[in-house]
Image (tube, rainbow, N blue to C red; front, side, top):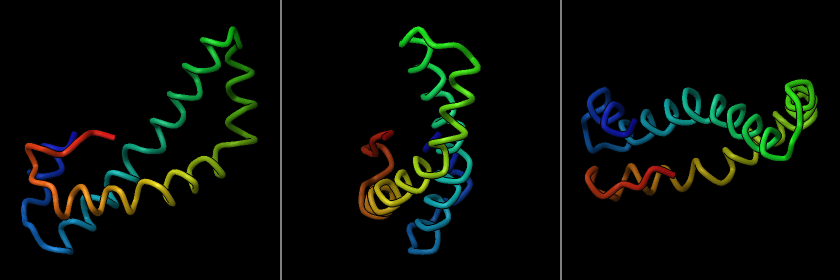
Length: 89
């Protein structure tokens, strides 16, 4: 995923860092939250309907919290860590 972001936004500028961060948080984070919630509910013995109910209640709060934590982390990751050393959070 990060390699694709680096190919799409190859520069080491502040603008490229923000572009990679925005694309990561808009394209990767939302479906990851859905998948994570689904897998967790499944491991807890829950059903698809329970997953949908959890997402209806918690999705936006989870997404906003994700952005509060991971946007600054990804700005540091993309802005200061060389590509081959970046960690997929």
